[in-house]
Length: 106
Image (cartoon, rainbow, N blue to C red; front, side):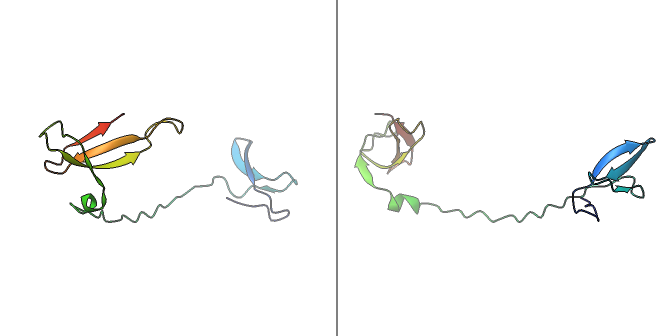
């Protein structure tokens, strides 16, 4: 971006005699610059993904629930608000034995 040396406003581009020039609302024109080039550099810092295996179940509460896959009677559970705020939360369950995950909508 170029700014007007007189008033400090942003210079705008316009075509005059088949050439692009920069001008300002205060009357300043810059005929030396015919085109402006925009360059953008994005510095992307990638973060390493941490993998935590088996540790999260130790912090989740256990409840009595029958697994639909292996019929084990204990499961870890957690609640997530998957719908609108006035709707009830969705209860997710994970079998203690086979690690099968399912939802309980009731």
